[in-house]
Length: 230
Image 1 (cartoon, helix red, strand yellow):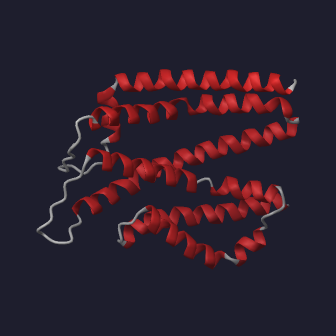
Image 2: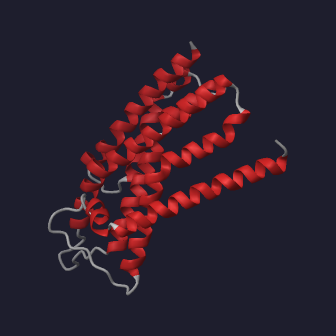
Image 3: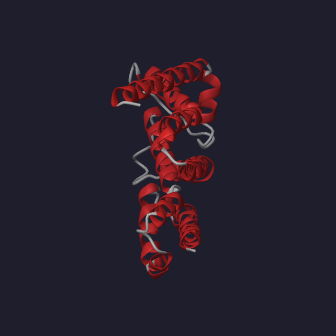
């Protein structure tokens, strides 16, 4: 294929992705009750969210529907991406690409699920009830709740890509298992700092909920890199 033919092919697949994402977002928008039942599930019982802007609830509905739609069609997006690059890959490279993409996707979903079911509920319960003084009451806005949930889910999903990243670096000869074992203590410090950034609650329990899974991913990455070397 010529350069312009590649460009036309890319444009065609981008249109497929955009149409699929739009259809999924519209579908999610139509099921508002079910959508926000999922979004509000981690919220502690008794916590009342408020809205202080005229258009905020409608805009929040649209934004959540868009992100939910992208999540729903994400396997199709990955398929279109792979279908575009696959003709330029050898058979072995295709198998490696499929393994990397599938593993990365599942790990991302695992990170999002861990945040949704475990980490975020503890975080919102702690921060929602935290007061510098009894004279200042907490009034949590809807936009604040949605933003924190989205950012924490995205961060945990990205952090869970660590084994895939280490596998890729090992494949190109940049990362060695011996190096990872040697700097394990340094990695633990970085993991704790990263956990504190993701969940700025200040309590050791929530910090452990984030740090321990990331550390286990680090140990898993060592085993993966060692296998690549062998």
